[in-house]
Image (cartoon, rainbow, N blue to C red; front, side, top):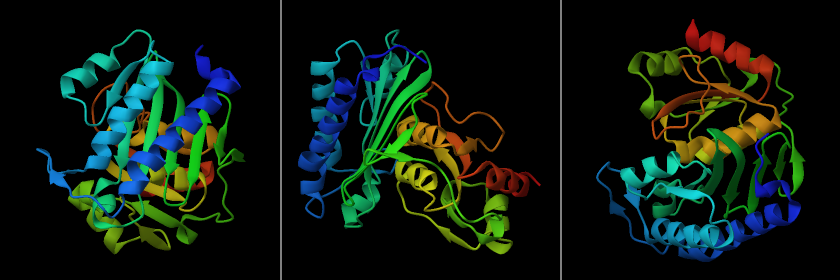
Length: 268
């Protein structure tokens, strides 16, 4: 377990409280009151994304200046530089689910992780609409609104499960197979990667599949699921977490038994 200031409860509480307050004042107050512009990659950008990133970076640099900062809205050059910082770097998605946020769907989050020596040592995902804070520290377990979060479900077979699947970013043959030979009971797609990971950890969906997500999308949620006891890997059987600004696929499940059945189906 890496040595970092958030082993101390006072720092941990300060970080959690600070992120929640910023999300309320920079993101929640702008919900249903923003115009979105289209970025070069076709995704949306709102004033909430921009201001949340500016204010969060200022908060982090004021209190913990030893860590570099990587935000979704940073330049690629700045992201790469932060990723290679010796002390470690913050990884922020200021609004994960901007497409939902911009059209008034209350399914979006703020996601913050800290990477030290290539490992995610803490993750926070705050859902302003439901006032839910998912959090985890490496080796210390996961929590939801300060209560222990343990990945579990009464569903014991894949055929009973609700899945969270993003079809848009899957290879066509796999997407068609899932659509025509669905091994689960029902399927959802919510539009916020960070929230997807947390909801799998909370058993609100039991299996998960996404074809291409950035590190700021998944870093915090990945640790939260890991610390809650869930399991994940990429479609090519690698660990999802990679200390690079590079898109990754993700397979996950709430329990080891469901994870094995889900992987077997996907790789058969």
